[in-house]
Image (cartoon, rainbow, N blue to C red):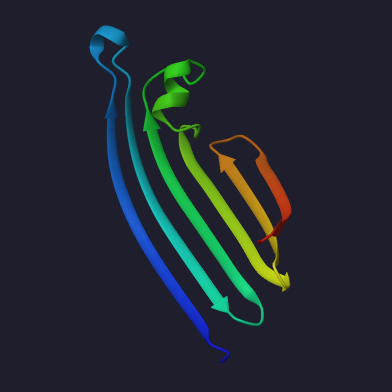
Length: 122
């Protein structure tokens, strides 16, 4: 049996984060939209793709540790995150996993990360 399954999901989120005035009074408004797709086929494996856009307004000092915590490592302005994953069984009890992640946070440059692994399933 060779079946293909495609699933696409979207989501939107609005979040207000506030630090108590006693500790600095920082405020962050975060608007996010996410698109995620997953394609599964017996012969080619599983492919997952995720893209997130976040618009952040923040009134605090961006270099302060509280900014990193409140903004989840993102920056003031437009933030883009993307992720691609391919998983496939390549032999009896052996799986190949390849992942790629990218991010563009605010006015900073693009950061790319890739990983590959082989797993033995016993």
